[in-house]
Every structure is written in structure tokens, then in C-alpha cells.
Length: 241
Image 1: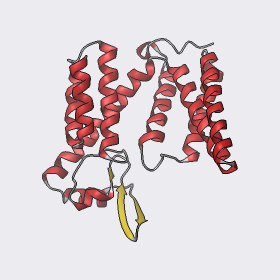
Image 2: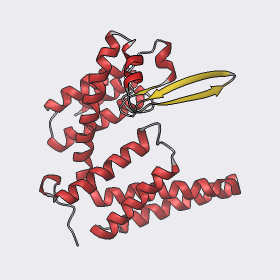
Image 3: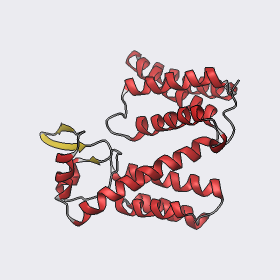
Image 4: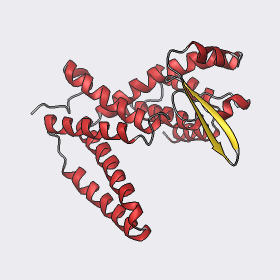
């Protein structure tokens, strides 16, 4: 049995690669608009976590306990809402179980890797967004030069709205109507801000201090989201720490 509970820095290269991919899948499947609610990606994450559980053999007793409780809740909802809800319930149980298994495998390494991945995302998103903030026309230039570009058109109440995604950056429909805010690769600025605040909180708890150089990057990235909710969440955490 391989001990994956040791610190990330002490892990073997193969273990580090597995852990980073697992955390990246968690972030992508829950925050990147092209992959959120994507059953294929969610099933890949679940299968990847199960393979890891088989290899690393973490303690899964609590995973089964909480998954069973969650499944019971989903069953009650399915009975209440009708047969059409059964597939949705089953899917939600898979999502919950995959996430729980991931936590069982990673332990506190989840926090460390999450912070490092979000640090990279924050740097890339901020570096790309600052020129856009200075000159909004740079966004269209960036989109046209990107080798990866997915354009999504949605219709609601007879109105069409278009979003653009270049994987490392997402431009929601309101971006092109004057709301120049940094979404990073996430579905909207508030979501990006939420993921950044979590990274700030995790890093603070890991080192038991607010004074870390990484926090400067997180704060700058948070400021570019122009998300009031994110600002308040960060202020309340700092004030209460």
C-alpha cells in the first residue's frame, strides 16, 4: 500500500502527478464553463478517483457513510418529485462520491495543490486581463489569436447572447456590453473570485498567517473580478482571522 498521506513535497514524482491531475479535474469539472455539468468529465473524474482509491487504499469508511446518507436524501427527493428525478439523483450521488473519495486520497495535500494551481491560474488570468482593462479592444485581439476558441450562443426570451472561451480565459456575454470584469477561466467573475478566496483561506490556514507573498497575487486577481460579494468574503475572513 502506498502512503499518499505524506506531504506533497515528500511524495514521489508519480504520486505528485496523480494528485495534481486529480485536483485539476476537481477544479475544471466544478468551475470551467466548458466542463461544468459535463457528464463525460464528471465520470472521468469519478473513475480516476476510484482507480486512485484502489491503488492507494485510503480509509473510505467515512466516504461510504456520508455517501449513503446523501444517497438516502436523493432517494427521498426522487420519491417526492417522481420517476424523472431518478437519473438526476444517481448522477448527484456519483458526483458526491467522487469528490469524497478524492478528499480521502489527498488529505491536506488537496489544500496545498489547490493553492498552487489557483496561483498559476491567478497569474495567467491577471496578466491577460490587465491589458484588456486598459484597452478593452485587446480582448477581441486575444480571442482572434488564440489557437483554442469556443463560441457559445444562448437564447433567452428572444434575445441571443454570445460568450467566448479560450480555455485560459472566459468572456461571458455581459463582458461585451461594458461589464469588463475578470472571469479567468471560470464561468463568471464571482465564481473566479470564490475560487480565489478559497485559495487565500487555504493558504492562510496552511501557514497560519495572512502575510504570504502569494496573497498579493490572490488579492490583485480578486480586485480584477470587481465582485462585491468576493470583496466582502475576503474582508470578513481577514477581519476574523
